[in-house]
Each structure stands twice: as structure tokens, then as C-alpha cells.
Image (cartoon, rainbow, N blue to C red; front, side, top):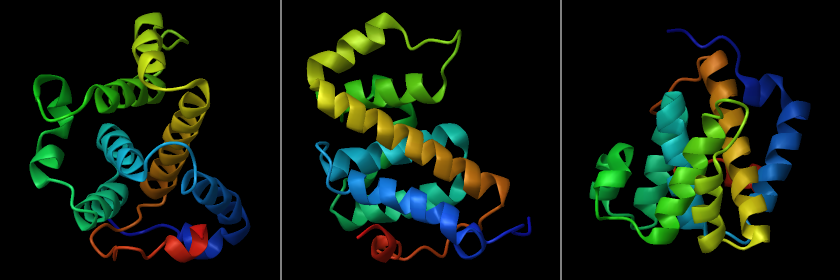
Length: 157
């Protein structure tokens, strides 16, 4: 598929708003490795090849165990994730796939046992932000494969 629009170049004003979210999330209350794991999982759900390429490379560069990425789609059945990670992944899935106009109470209860109210707000902002990036990349067919670790750091610093 051919890329439709390079939204990084052609939507610079819109991207400034997105970069502001990224800058905040880069310093927020949630550990960065967990955020990247959430970004990767949400990108799996949405089928965003560009973000999967980007976040897999970022995770591996920080020393993430590749096996955890290989089985992330089946995280519930894999004993590779902490309770906090499982709560974040479950929350990310529920927020990404909101159905019946609601995130279930039991999902919220598990998340609120692992995260403070501030952390839940930050985690939800991270989830909504990666969902927005996924939608930009998918809509404009951003080509995957060429991401270099740290390439977008300049915009979020």
C-alpha cells in the first residue's frame, strides 16, 4: 500500500498537540517500560504496523525480553507479566475496545488496586494517545520498518 499523507510533515500544527502529550507522558507517573508495553499491545489490537515496529524496537533497546513481546497477544495465559502489567494491559484493552459505552467495573477494580488515581489518569491518557497515533498511521498508511530507536525523541523532548 502506498502512503497517503506524511502527517508528520503535513500536519505539523496538529502534531505539535500530539507531541505535547508525548512530552507529558515521557515524564508522567507511569514507568516508561510499562507505557511502551501498553503502546505495543494497543497497536496489536488496532493493527498498526508502524507503531508495532516502533515500540518493539524501543522495548528491545531498553532490554525487554523478546519472549514477552512474542506472547503479548496472549498475556492472560503467559506467566511473564507482573500483576501491575496485567492490570495495565487489561485496562488498555478495555479502554481501546470500549463496548456497551463502558469500561467494566471489575476491570476498573483490578486496575485501581495496582495504580493510584493519578497513575490511572496518566495510563488512560497514554492509551488514548497511542490509539490516536494508531489511527493517524493506519488512515494515512504510514510505512512500517524504517523506524530508528529514538527518532521521535526530538519532538517529545
